[in-house]
Length: 144
Image (cartoon, rainbow, N blue to C red; front, side, top):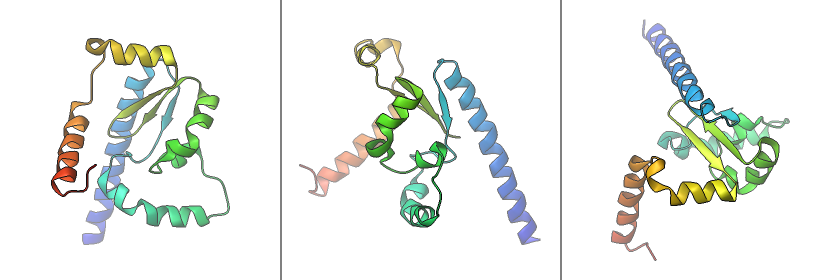
């Protein structure tokens, strides 16, 4: 009984994640940029905690991982950013079940994004979380 309940919950969670991802894909495609689907949101806290263990296993496998898996790694942009932009163009969207993230490497587009503040929505929730964490960083005496 418990096992069937766990399996049913896993299936329901997977189905809901796929539905949410497809809704986010539609939003990202409205921007007319290439889309890469990633199975796990990079801001997922349990993923941030357990990904070093997962990547140890994945890195030991004898084959190369597709973009949708490699771009789930924390800090992927350090090693992969120019390769992905060379392959996909000056802008692309990473789409997860939670949200989508637009990556832009065109200087004129970045200028428009930064200077036309009222035309583009800001991720206020992420800013608020960052400010909360940075405040604690300084309270603990770890900040510069």
